[in-house]
Image (tube, rainbow, N blue to C red):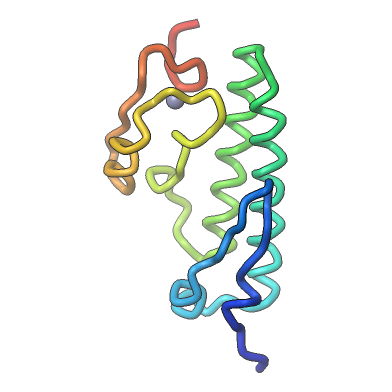
Length: 125
Ligand SMILES: [Zn+2]
């Protein structure tokens, strides 16, 4: 089988250079097909984030956030990880004002730090 090289794992997406972690790729036993799927999901996510950034209506922003969550589940599936919402970077979506560092620390736990003025995640209308 053809060997996956670091070069196969680099791509530009939404103006940002992304490099998938080769150790993780090897550990998960990913194929070229899996990598192509992961790249296309990242591109979909970048497009969604772009649309979401220019949206001003809270209800539509929340709907985009739900789409983003679905994409994160598909990404976890493509990587061969369990579908676990607690590992999603949900606080990185456009318009979110929740604390990034706190929520990074909470990854994989049941805790979330929700800012009361976040139009994406706070419950208030
Ligand atoms: Zn938020």
